[in-house]
Length: 385
Ligand SMILES: NC(=O)c1ccc[n+]([C@@H]2O[C@H](COP(=O)([O-])OP(=O)(O)OC[C@H]3O[C@@H](n4cnc5c(N)ncnc54)[C@H](OP(=O)(O)O)[C@@H]3O)[C@@H](O)[C@H]2O)c1
Figure 1 (tube, rainbow, N blue to C red):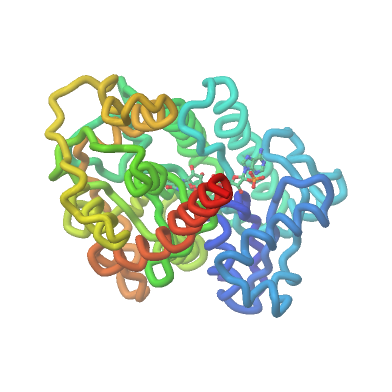
Figure 2 (figure 1 turned 180 degrees about the vertical axis):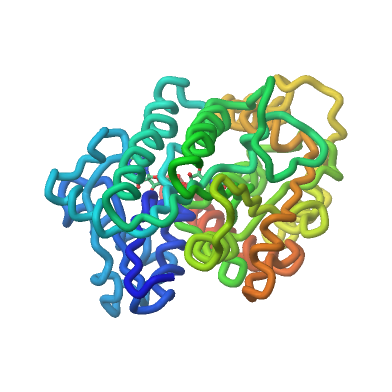
């Protein structure tokens, strides 16, 4: 790390980006942070940033620590990133590290829409980074990919480039893979690092998340009685990682590690730090006081279209469960040998899911399920009057 590092972070209003920003703020006075955030104006972009940070780190916002963050109002889908020529010139010359975390994370956007953000947005960020490397001080471009660029491969998934015939479960996976390919192709001209988190959940100590997505929507349906059964082999494990681990690991890999350009790191739990889906669901049911035998998990021999057939005909729930079929049904074993080596002696450890599952679920139930139930109860009471 040099005396004055300037990190440009995209995606700072997202789940991982917001936690990463908090982590980077703790990296010392020598680290300056600029964030590229969408907004109607710089002030609007800052307000959006602060609103999300207030959820996960209220003290930072209330004590004014976020004032030291330079907020660049922009958009990765614009070839100039939506920056004025003056602003772009200044940041091109000053930036030392780019962390590109912005993406469209919806799974089933039409391919052209997903490509516009995930592929074209990454092209624009790479273009900017190459310029900053040529005329300025850029040392590294870090790309947040996903462990699921492996598509529907099964078995052990290694930290290598995935080539050949890949089948993707959705346009998100496909466009993240296409973007990753661009990043790897740039590795001769630019020092690049590819980081692939798996399913990222709330903070391991507080359970907090900016938005409760990916793992949480099916749990929400189960805990509100809208989904009676899951169609998946009960012993299948979901590969979950807490957002604080992802943020700490990305910050370390960006600032303190000098891997060869194009190196790939899995931020994944693997089978030895995961739990079977059945245990996760049972724990959620028991913490919500619903009795853990309420949800028999089916051994799945059925087609994907039947994945949501246990949703009592609720089309919204059925459609959502179809999106989850590949994640629930395919058993994968993510290998993270590179990451373990790079984080050795860093003090950054990924806990076993059993150590933080309760904190995760308690916060989710307390913030998302109980308030919704109270709203329904009060609506029902209002209706009876
Ligand atoms: N969460 C996971 O489980 C997971 C797992 C593996 C990999 N990842 C990867 O990690 C990264 C962060 O994921 P996340 O879960 O934090 O995503 P997220 O919560 O959906 O946030 C996405 C971020 O990207 C920004 N963004 C989207 N389109 C943009 C645009 N055109 N210009 C500028 N910013 C834009 C969003 O800004 P707005 O606030 O303006 O929408 C938001 O800050 C992504 O690259 C994702 O693919 C996530």
